[in-house]
Image (cartoon, rainbow, N blue to C red):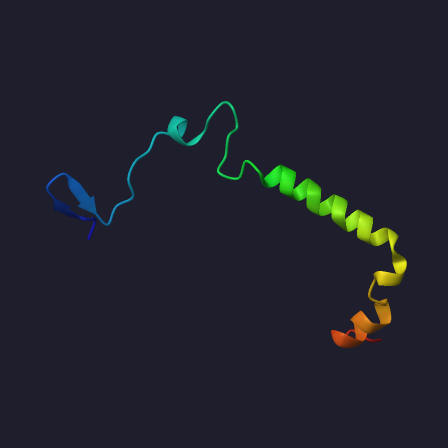
Length: 69
């Protein structure tokens, strides 16, 4: 069944949208804030890595996940 025609609407088929409607020259995407979020997350992780005392010991991680040798 290719689709059922009801008036001007065709059910069961994907609508056709030209590629130009999907891609913009400015590069705007729904996730405009993603790059800023990603940068902030990386910077926070790098800052946390400086405090070695606050980090979880590798031996504990290996034990907790059952990866001991």
